[in-house]
Length: 479
Length: 107
Figure 1 (cartoon, rainbow over the protein chains, first blue to last red):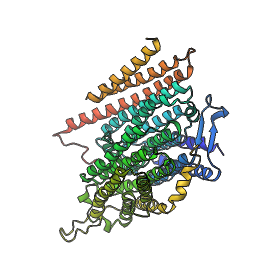
Figure 2 (cartoon, each protein chain N blue to C red):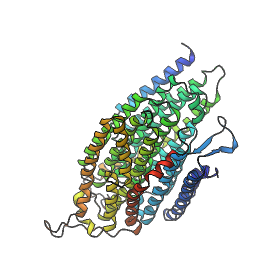
Figure 3 (cartoon, rainbow over the protein chains, first blue to last red):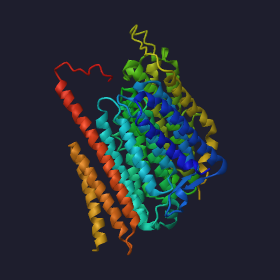
């Protein structure tokens, strides 16, 4: 069964290679078939982990430290499952219309590489392997950003610089850990790492990965990159690529390094800044895709807000489950929202909020999808977003960490404000003031209409299964 | 000060200088070069760590080699992007006034 783990990385890689020589139209067929296959492998990994517990695969049968291990525990499985669902949904959207994949060819190759890079990051049992997978992920994401229209190459170059700088900081951490322990294997390094040599590498890696996650105040690169990307690219970037870097933060904090309360406080404070500042910036935007992109900055803030709670003794397990739930909720809802926004942009030629007035009349499904995603992103009761925030709040109250509770409440109010603006615009009947100014987008392909509503529904309804999800995250943890 | 210490100090210096230059410079090629200098500093740290134990350790050297390949990859991507940006900028300034032929392009 452990052969599944290399397969999860290799299948998308092979799809990417096969797509390279094909003409653009054929790439869509092959890419979609490959996406289905990659998704099956990914979900299979999740099933096996749920059923039989953590998996380990030693490449070519060599034991670490000589060989390289791939490992899947509950934490990896949760993110692999998210990737399998979101990337498959995006593949359907991309195959439905060529314009959704940008002006230049290359989407299918790069998106498959992103998939391979993500699975590589999630399964890496070895620090250097994690670094290489992170670089593949970053370079493929830069390529995808560059597929956008005017201004996209500049945003892509900015992203490249940020992503590479983040990786280099991560690499410095790898070097320091190797210098202190003589091994690159995460499990072995954790056993040998002396406590007094842990804080510098942890700080370096957290800073580098925070840069790649767009934690405020280093978030400025994200909105132009994510909002300017084609319709099928923005959901991948916001829902998945950001999570790749954040997953490594979780992995390092929980498995490799001893908890560092002061660093966690700094990260949490910056997360709080991101929640508030990102929301305020989202409020000041008038273009739908930029609102959604700034909302990602705010949501990333929530992820970092979990760190100061995570390091409180005894709260490791509930908070790990809560932060993963938050990441999954954001992944599903943000994918739904970016697909809907991109589809409206393709259908109307604008994503200015005023240009979308009354679009719900002809685009009921898209509007429904937007609303579902909004419900989960705000964190209204029963949704997955709510389950995550509720867990944060419970831990914050139990440990008396009141400032986190304040940030949660403020962030929720602000999210309601900035997310209701586009929804209100879609629902508004423009008939009363300017007769005939109601927007009727061009008909949208079926995949673009149904993907947002399905993912949005998933983000809301999975809230009912938050407890089994927490159990999944706990598999193989707490060692 | 031993050779190892010297290597690590130089590595830190290079990485720091590269970051400062990268954040302050406007020219795109210069920024890419600064990023390379930062990368060189990081890789030098890897090499420096490999000689810290009496016997030279080959693993960090292999890592540095992989790092060099990755540096090459991102530099290549960066140069291509810089070229696309500059060509686009020239097109915009060249077409200003004269009826631009790509007005019908989406966005």
